[in-house]
Image 1 (cartoon, one colour):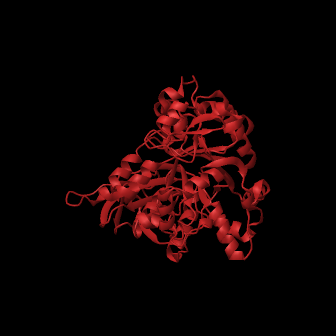
Image 2 (cartoon, rainbow, N blue to C red; image 1 turned 90 degrees about the vertical axis):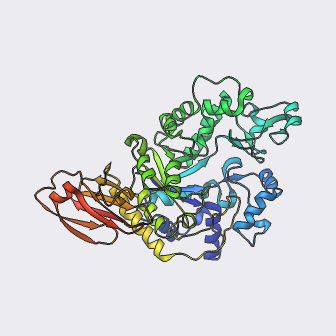
Image 3 (tube, rainbow, N blue to C red; image 1 turned 135 degrees about the vertical axis):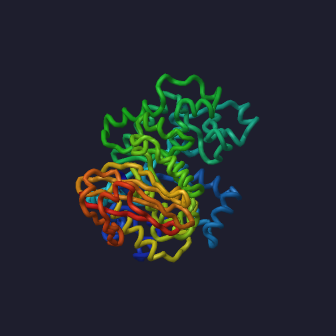
Length: 483
């Protein structure tokens, strides 16, 4: 199973430079730092934001009062030097020289590979910066308008290189002021996308595709109407991904995806898609909602990315207070599919810096939380190599708190593993019938994978009526039983 650790590359390197008293780039990150990144249970590192950022996009950001206010909210002592521009306003898919350039990235990839880790990088398929070379070199790759469109709606169009182009957007929000829209129906764009992704595949082991659903034929047609023109027979990703994999058969494709389009994108070639529905249910809803989500087919769930935060979402420590974060973390760490952890999450950071910034505020590390995550991530990795099953919980007529329990099991070649979580703010009791064969007629010792606790039970009871569980608010069991 894929376990991704996302790093905000620019901020991270800046803090390493302060830590070591010298400029640190991707090419000369100390080995001990890569050792810290390569903690047990992590197998993939996402270096977010390595490409050349747009000077034109930076100018637009510096003139945007709303953005500036968000920067100051995250970094009260903000200076203009802290604003680097958006990593999703890409001027060119070349590693920024300030981060170490292509040679620095190659050294970082080699350092990760030596520790058994893969590298993934960003691709932004929907839009480019207003100073991207394609505006002059490949105008047919972009959505174009007319001078009348520009006069009628200057917030949605811009003039460049003698052409009028549409600003990038999705169908539900106003246009983004700092980017230009790519044309998903353009044969030229599709060919150029293949070339770009092949180039990224030369430098990394995977690619995280930003807002991937915006390029799907039906979504793109809905967004752009007459400006989109006629849809090609082939959808965007089924055209692009197989051609990229002719050159890079093992390249991992991860989609940022919303609007319940995860399954469709999986069918179109993505290995994994963001599971925003699970995130919303863990953060805002209850155990019943989470359980309903986990009733989906296993093939679909294996293609999801479970997470509690990333650079677009608030910090987990700020949104999931106290033990609720730990309960949610146990869930995402032990579910089928990929897992995404965000640098700073383990230490309990509460401030989510906007991606435009090169610096974030100092925050004290939560040593207890860090120790918990270290043990959890390491313990969950081997468990998730087995076969997963969602389990039922039962209760009694006068006690229905079992509805607040979430339970599932993993069966590996060596062990049975059981996860039970009280996903509520009140105590919960219930029984969890275990589905494993060979329980009857033997004594069983269930051992806590994080704390070494032990529970001796008779196998017949575990099978029927099931393991008795009594958990306080937001508490959990992660137990192992030898086969």
